[in-house]
Image (tube, rainbow, N blue to C red):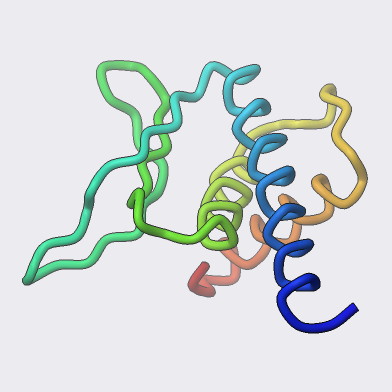
Length: 107
């Protein structure tokens, strides 16, 4: 498959992976927020934080799904997920992004 159909398929796959990661966040009681984080002087894509004791991942709403996936996977890699079933490709993604974070690589 080539061209737009392949791109559409990849986009649909990204949307499904994003759904799985967002559901995992809900299970871990992590709030995922999409905000406008860009202004003329500063561009922030997002990341994890704790606000009043509540874990949150805040991301720029204008980011494509592939960037959102990387940020969620990177932040979820900080949590113990051994007791939670995840599709193998999602677990691998989280582990890979978590390792990249530990190595100091950008998402």
